[in-house]
Length: 298
Image (cartoon, rainbow, N blue to C red; front, side, top):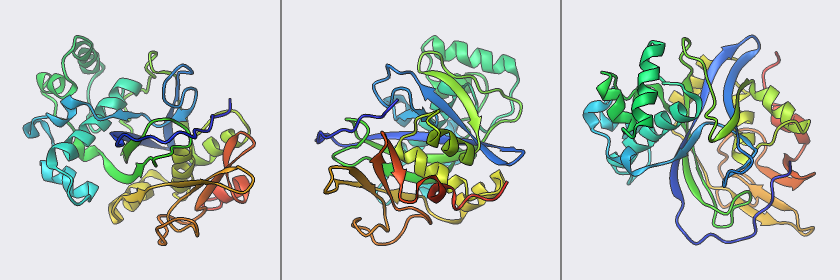
C-alpha cells in the first residue's frame, strides 16, 4: 500500500506526542516492537509504527508523587530549554500509557498477570492510567524511558495532514510480559530487528513512514540493547525538524540536519540525510544498502 503524499499546509501548531521504541535482545541483535495501524486510522493507516500517541490532558496532571523519579529527572532527560515540568512529566506518562494501551506492556515494572488484568479493568472503567497504577500500589516508571530523539512535523507534512511534536524514547521490554496489540487501534504487534524491518519494507511486505525508516537505520548500528541504551545516555536527544521540497521532477524529498538543502548544517546522525518519494515509498539515496550500511553484520 502506497503512502499518499500531502501537499497541504497545516497552520495549527504541532501536537505534543510520545512514542517508544521498545527493545529486547534477539539472536542476531536488538529487536524492536512495531504495531501495524488499522487501515482506517486517521494517521498512517496500515503503516507499521512504534507504539505511541498524543499527549492527553490527564498526562499533564500526573501527581509527581506517583513517579519513581523526581519530575526534574524527566525535564533534564529531554534537554529542552523552556519546557515546563508538567509537560516533561506528561510526555513520559503518555509514553508509558500508550505502550500499555497499544501493546499491553507495563514498562519498568515486574508485575504478575493478575495486576495487569486489574490495571486493564481500571483503565477500561474510566480511571486514569497513573491513578490506576497508584490504586494498585505501583509507580509510574519514568526511569524506564530514555529520550532518543525529537521529531517536529513541518508545516507541509509529507505523509499526513497533521503536525506532531513527538518525543521518541527507548525502553527495555519487560521479560515476563507478552506484547499484545490493541484490536481497536492496530492489527498486529511484531518484533523485528531493525535490519529485518527495513528489508521487509524494501520488499514491499510492510509500509514505514520516514521517522520509522530513519530511526530503524540508526538502531541498526547497535549490536545489542545495552549499546542502544548507552548511546541514549551519552548524548542529548537529537532534534529532527524535516525540511521537505519537491525537486525539478516533482519528487518529494525530505531533508534532515546535515543535508546540503537543510538549514541546520550539523548532522544529527551518521548515514543518509534525505529520503525521496520513489516507487510509492520513501527511499534513501543509495537504496536499501544506504539504510543498512551502518548495521552490524549478523
